[in-house]
Length: 166
Image (cartoon, rainbow, N blue to C red):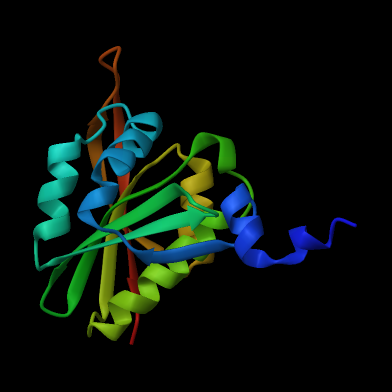
């Protein structure tokens, strides 16, 4: 009787379905800014995302679940290296392994563009993010003291992490 839910297109429309990682477009800028603001103290605005989405040396992927964008990854490329600038997942969707899918797919696209080394910075006490990156093959190569400024004025350390793709 409920067989019509088995059709994945209908499930995607309904809001379920599987997650898809795909290139982001200018139409996504407002949603990406909303996700960034929900994930970080100083969220990037829609204009900042619009600028990144038009830069040739920036790669932006969105993570879509059904028809809703629930995450993104942004990297900047230079020669055969890249820096992951930000990854964010909707707070209500965290803890489901979606960030791993997003990160690994994003890394695959970077490798396809000839990137051999990936760098990122992560707040030292952000255990979930550190675990994600370590499981994806990143290792700590440095530390930046008092790199992140918190709303109350507290300054937190950042770890510089690296992964080779070659």
